[in-house]
Length: 64
Image: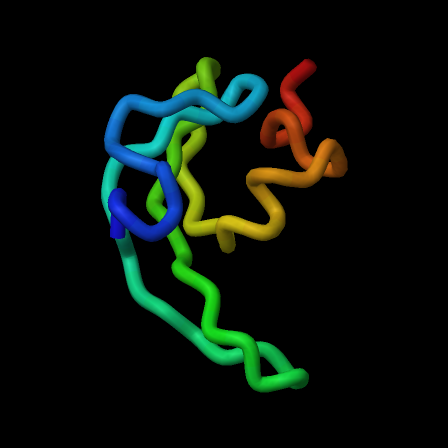
């Protein structure tokens, strides 16, 4: 995954830190997106798509 996306464990997006690859899923348009297990600086863990992580819409879990 790292070669194609430039995303690797430890990479930060806002307050999120990538922990590991979780799975890939297709969008309604047929685009396959990787989903990653991430942890917020406050300790909250989630699985988010790479599209969500790269947007400025979700920089944290809502803790700040």
